[in-house]
Amino acid sequence: MMILQQHEIISRATAYAAYKNWYTESKESIERFWKHHTDRFCDFLAITSKATSVGANITKAIRAFKEYDTSKNTGIISFSGFNKKELETYYHTNKIVGPKIEPFAEALKGNLNLVVVDRWIWRLFYNKDSGTDRQRNMIISSIKDAAQEMKWYPSEIQASLWAFAKESSNGHFKKVTSYADYMEKKKEEIEELID
Image (cartoon, rainbow, N blue to C red):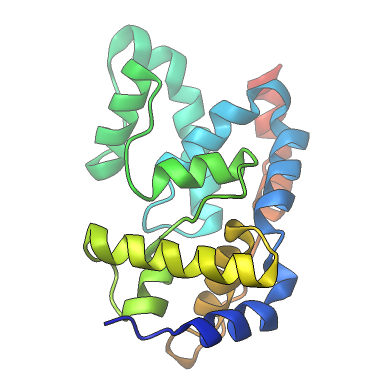
């Protein structure tokens, strides 16, 4: 049974409305740094995002971007675990596969009608790190219903709920950060890659 009800979705999203533009702001900063490589980098951010912080995600995505052309010729991928499998698929097919990473890549590219169900959203709705497809679909439906009622995009509701979940996890404050903060720190490395 879902532990987050419709009125709670709306009240928490409203309380964290400052984060509703997280995807739009992320897209703008990714475009600023990655220019004509924006879509490719969004794909790498999504693929390497599982179970990692925003800062570590940037580092992993840059590494995947560096390896992309080389691995197409050599087949060598330095990643392990689920990142390796998903990167191999992507490197050979240019397709992203996964119920979290597919919508995440598309939301980063600007499709605000999608709902990304990551571990933070799972915890918020079901108090666990993952669940069934049926449960995922219930989360998506609930968020879309709230979005329609609030006249927000579904991704804006999800981003606000994600910020709430991160900041309130286990009673400990965790600052929600943006990709822009970390890309600024790696500006010179990025500039070398895209020239």
